[in-house]
Image (cartoon, rainbow, N blue to C red):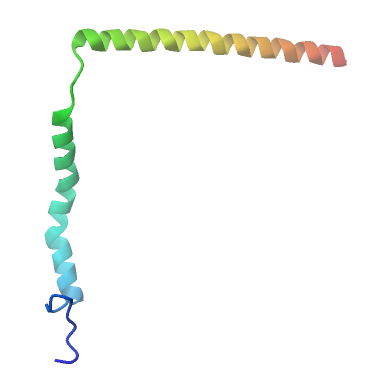
Length: 90
């Protein structure tokens, strides 16, 4: 009995093969748990109405077009500045 390992509860510690069996026995539950949690969280979500979704999408598209124009103007301005400085140096 001196060579038997016990944990704090006095139970025998599982050996390597018992750990392997327990791992494969618990594997399906460990794989399914995140999907169950995701499903429960998705049920709590308040989804936007069709009207809200269209409104939000239009706002995002308008903002993207605005930012594209601003970045394009900045790019054209910096290109013109570099060309001007390059022509002065010649």
